[in-house]
Length: 616
Image (spheres, rainbow, N blue to C red):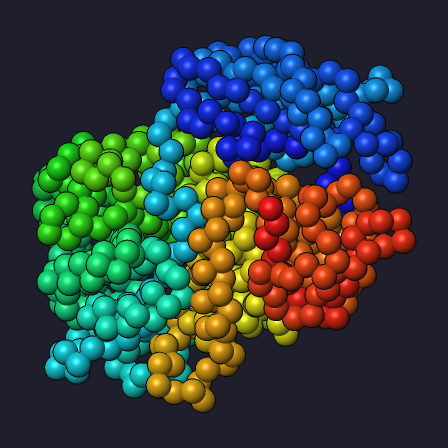
């Protein structure tokens, strides 16, 4: 399926040259359409273009002016008036033979389509520049590294202690109790490893005290678990990270606490306590919990007291850790999609807006991202969190394209393994789920091949698949996110199994040493075109896909194959400047360039492979 001749627009600087627009302001909006001959699947030339916006709920049309022709592409421009905080728009095209087409964020359409996948432009401030496209590294503290001080701390009563090289208990009652004893000073002592990989953001899963190894059932939001070294260890870690140019974000559970949390203990002991309003208690004393798990009582965001304590003002939990002396650089919010939602109650957007307001008042350049496991775009329109975790748009279709049929937990699906799909479906799902995000939200969303909540990519994918997946993660828009251990090819059947202690001094436990690949990807990601450049798909068939990122006269061409492939990109599809024999900036596997008989570009893969070319 050739996609490269489609008319194109996205919210990148190439198409919105004026950058952010304030409410009531005006922005120049550009698009391109193919001017070449109408043959071989190429569209007819476009004669006229209109920008369709929705202002106060009513569609409006403004005719675009023709800017000129560049490399057989017509460029068009119209003015968009930001009447509402979220501007929604698409394009109407009239082609030379008289037919019409629509262009929205999901692609081209021969018929009128609903507004759900229109382009979005948020007039609310975008996420911080330092985070757009930055490389993130996720650490699960219990399993990353132990400092010498950890040996002097006795295991708590709830724990089932384990040696660092022991197997992970990933099924049964001991799963959340198995305790390896990693701590924050252990993370600090391994920061040179992160620097070598080009990491720019360290994402720590919860550091609050709790009766589990995962710490999502917090006993308090006001102190660091002594098992991790306490408050001083976090201060030391953040300072050491900042000295190395690495930002640090924490993990906050706004949806629930643990049943041993100080708020919940007070509420349980005294039905008249103010903290009782923080939770959903029934008259008989029962309470709501996350997915019916009694140890995770759900927070009731109708409570003014909860809001004051947790998310409002400089003394709130949200502000506490962003301010001195801790100086975190932002938050990842756990199950952000479920926060404030229960039956008919829905405080989700209001809570997100309060988190944003308090965080940015405390630290104006803070990064705020939230977990959402499915169609996340409706919750991320620029006015709450800066971005999400891209499970639906990237991770799930990626696994399905690269699956080897191994039985793994596929995001809670009843299927025994990811269903194998062609590259065309990967692209279709990527575009469909990413469409309703403002471009700035896409740049501030996590792009992960796996996380602490999923099986490992190395277990779920074909041989060489993880390397191809990593290349895609580092070259698509967003923040490429490495879960600690990906660089060692660690394996796992589900989220708990993937939380494997790092094999620092045990080469026999390294499944596949990918450190050189991740180091090269981290260095390549410094290229501005890969951080904020536009995304234009060129080709997607069963085993092969190709796309370009474009910014300020620089083009990055990315090709990925899951098997042997021989693909011809038609003449005119690739940017000027790519010739046979052009050396790739990065390559895994064997993937070469040649010239087809008609002057197009031939891509040949000898098997699972991926490559990136940088062109001026």
